[in-house]
Structure formats: structure tokens, C-alpha cells
Image (cartoon, rainbow, N blue to C red; front, side):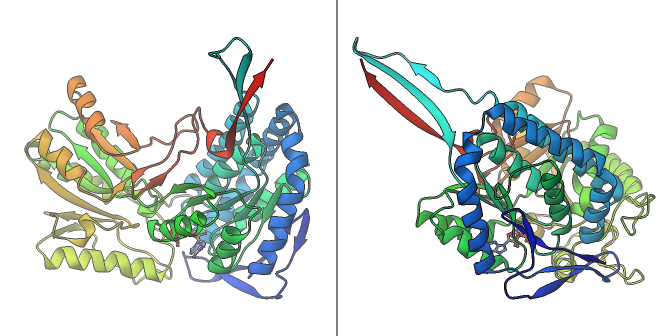
Length: 476
Ligand code: ADP
């Protein structure tokens, strides 16, 4: 059984308290390993290590930092199977998806290694003959990163990549449920030769670790991916020391199928967007709007595709949909379905937890006739339930799609170019998939508007949030 340790200042350590906690495999509720239950004291040591290492790391030529990141990316790829196995063991996604997560994690490191050497400043025209003006960009300082359980490796890589590329050092707190892939990642960082103190890993008590990260003055930036509720708390605490924040929070993605869509493509997109990771991604379609003329056809094709999903332990190669993370998630999903049904929705397929399997499994579900009065139309589901709404006009679809406090991802399917442009301009979301259910790319700025967060990760400006701009005015 895996007995993880924390990584602080280049050493593998237990929590100071000596406490450990158990990790539960969601596919069969067995104990998958244990990890240190770290707290404030461990976090303080990690922050001090990041602080001590900062000057040296930020002072390296960018090319050297890029070299470390590229080496680490190579190591991730060489250890793909082990990493994928740990992701699946601790959070349940099918192995094929876990392998994809490892691949994109290596890509995040490589992309940011490429950006490290292009962190340009500017020479700015002066308005007086005796002055020269310029701006340079410098690492913001030691960074705290808090990551969720649904992508235990790629969320860490998406934060560590740009932080290290920019010259920041880091303290990572992975999700309580899924530290394993992060621990392995840090073992590989050590193997890549990344100096002690540059990357530190603390597992355990979210509140105690989070509070220390936010109140310690050495931490200059916090990058968080998780729920909107926790994100709001962190933003409030960060305000006390005016720490920079990047927040990638909850979502409630609409997916619109217009009457002129390629229905096969739309069904494949809805399947991918809704059921990938058992519906547990922040960009999962949470509301599927279908134009009335094509609703019957779409439903028939969608139902057939959903019923082909192979439910099971993600470690079995044939599995295409795994469990949800825990029993609490299972209950939340069930209560959303019951609420919708009590208000008039109809279950087309699925609809309940799978009692015959030992883990946290919920039947892949389609709900028809969903409307705005139902909880599922407003609250993130994070589970394999596809609610179908009908609409008549483009305006109606846009207005309903925008009717959410969230603004992370939105999708639509159409073959009409004019409509494509009108709709992507009108949707109040940070990420849009036009006939594309998989808009995540290392080259693309990822992040949301409204209560889905602030800041962008990845893309051509991926380092920007980890850098401060310093303006220099020189009188000659
Ligand atoms: P989810 O509902 O997806 O688990 P959370 O926002 O609860 O989302 O978790 C995302 C990350 O935030 C995890 O690493 C979790 O341990 C951490 N977290 C939860 N509560 C706090 C807190 N009070 N302070 C700091 N981090 C927290």
C-alpha cells in the first residue's frame, strides 16, 4: 500500500504531528494508501523553504529553468503508466483518461518552458529628450497552489509549470483525497534535479494549510482550482495582504444543439463533455439545450450512446465511465435528480446509484423536460447526469445559456458561420467550444468569468499571472 510523504526543502518528511490519514479508492471503497495529515507548522516550514530558494531560482537564466521543466516533462512521460495508475486508484477515472491527463501535464511543462525564455520586457518611447523608459517583468515571489481531486496531476502541472518558468518557487497543497500523483510528480522533480526548496508539497488539513498559506507574508500569490465557495473564502483572506490571486472555480456549462447541427458530432460532443471523468470536470456540460425541431432525433441518438457506456472500476481497460469521488457526491447527484423528477422532469435512462457495485457509482442518466425551476439548472452537478432543455430560437438559447452565476465553459453545435460568430460573441463564458467538446489546450488561456473565477492559466500569456511588471524611468 502507498505510504506517501510530504516534500519540504528537498526532504521527504512526515507531518510534525506524526498524524496520517487514509485514502479511499472510490471504485471499491478500499483503503488505497495513507498520507501525512500536515497542518500549519508543516506549511510554515514549506513556505520558509520556498522563500529561501526564491532568489536563487528567480536568478537563474530562463533557459536553465526551462531545461529543468523539459527534463521533468520527459520524466512524466517515461512514468506515464505509474502516474495514470495512481490517478485512477485515488480518484476513479478510466485509465485511458488518466493517461491523457499525464500527457497534457507534460505538455503544460513544455509549453511554459518555451514561454520562460520569451518573458520580454518593453522599451517605451519617452516624452522628454532626457529620459528613457522601460518595463521589465520579474517573478512575483513564492506561490501557493491549491488543487482539486478531479485532475490530481494536470492541475498541479498547470500551476507549477508557469510558476517555475516565471522564476517563482512553490508550495503545493493537493486535494485531500488525491495526493498520490502529486507525490510521484515531486519524486520526478527531485530526479530532474530541481533544487531543494523550489517545489514543496504539503498534504493534509485543507483549512489549516490554507490559512497558513494565506496569512504568511512570504507567499505573494495564490493560485487555486476548486469550488466557488472555497475560492471566495480564499479571495477574502488574500485581500488582507493584497496577495495576487488566480481562481479557477465552479462551472455550469451550457451545451446548445441548434437545428442545423451535425447531430452525430453534437451527440459525440455531448457524450464527451458530459460523461468524461464521470461528469466531474468544471467544464462538463451541465445543461444541454436542444432546438425543438431536432430534439426527438437527438434524444434517440444520445440515449443509444449513453447506454453503450461501460461502467466500472477505472483500472479495467474496458471501462469508459468510473465512479464519482465519494458518497457525499453520490447523494448530491441523487438529490438533484429527485428534485428534477418531483418538479416534472422525466428519466430517459439511468437515474439512480448502482447498489450492485461496491464503489460510488451512479447510472449514466438523461433527464428530459428540465426547466429553470429545478436545482440542476443552477447548481453544479459534478456527476453523470445530462439534463435536456428544449428551446425554439437562437435568442432564447443564448439568454437561457447565460442565465447562470457561472461563466467558465460553453459549447454549441451549428454549421452556420454567421450563427457561430453571433453565439460565441454573446455567450458570457471564458471558454467556448464551437462544434468542439474538448476546448482544453495548453496553448489556450483557460479560465472563467463571473463566479467561475479570475485569471487565466495556459496560453500565450501563461506566465503573466506569475510576474510583476516593474517600470524603470532613467534620466540621462
Ligand atoms: P471540491 O468540492 O471539488 O472538493 P474544494 O474547493 O472543496 O472543491 O477543494 C479544492 C481544493 O481546495 C482542495 O485541495 C481542498 O482540499 C482545498 N480546500 C478545501 N477547503 C479549503 C480551505 N478552507 N482552505 C484552503 N483550501 C481548502
